[in-house]
Image 1 (cartoon, rainbow, N blue to C red):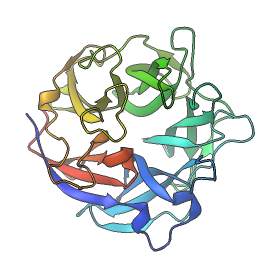
Image 2: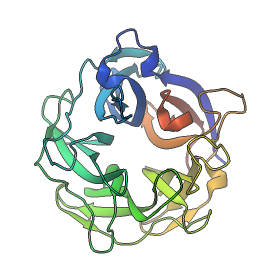
Image 3: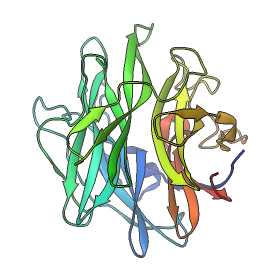
Image 4: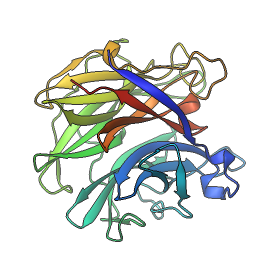
Length: 324
C-alpha cells in the first residue's frame, strides 16, 4: 500500500477576503502546471447561485510555492476561460480543467456544461489554447472535441490529458445510463480513453478501462495517469449510484490501478493509500475525490477534493517513497 502524508487544506474560496461572485464557493477539478519558481493550480469555482439554485462554473487558478505547495502566493483575479455563448455546449459552465504544455502553447481540456430538461445537465469535452503562458485561454472552436456518440450516448466528462512518448491520451468518463430517482435523476459513468496525434482529433478506444467493484452502477471519474518506475499508475475516484452527496458510506473514495500499456489495467484500491480523515467535522471526513497526481522537484504530490465534492476547497498530500 502506498502512503500519502496529508498536508491539509490548500484553498477555500469562502475564506478569501476578496470573494467575487463568480468564485463564490467550490474549488474543483484541480490540475497543475509547473513554472520555474511556482506551481499553478487551475481550479473551477461556482458563482453565487440564483434564486432557483442554479449556478455556473468558471476556471481560474491559484499559484503556490514550489518549496511549500501549501503556501499560496497568488490567486487569479479573473477567469482564464469564460463559458460559451447562447446555445453552445459550454454555455453554463466549464468544469473540470486539465492542461498540458506542447511547444510554446498550453492546451486546456474541460467539461462544457449545458442544462437539460429531463436530466439536470449534459457535458461534452472542449479544448482551449493559451499563448500567453497560461493567463488566458481561447476556445479552439464553438463546439466540443469529444462528445456523445452512437455507443456513448450520454455525457462525456472529467477530462485528463497526458502526452506519453509523443502520443496524446485523453482519459475521460462516459455516461452509461441515467436512472430516475426520487429527488433527481442520477448518472452512472465509467472511465474510458481516447487517443490523438494532434490534440484536436480524437479516436475513442470504446471500452471501459477499470472493472467495477461496487456493482454495475458504480461510477468512476477523474482517471489521472502518471508514468513512474516502468509502469503507468492511475488514481481515480469512484462512488455508489445514489445517496452519495452527504452519506459517507456511499460517497467518493480514491482508487488505484496499474498498467503497462494504458489499455489493460489491474485495479487494486487497497494500494491507493489515501482515504477520508477520521476527525469528525474535518473538511475531508465524508469523501475524498477527483485526485490529481504530479511530480515536482523529486517529490510526488496528490491534490484532491473533500466533502461535497470540493465545496470547501481542495487539499494536498505528499507520497512517501515512489510509485512501483
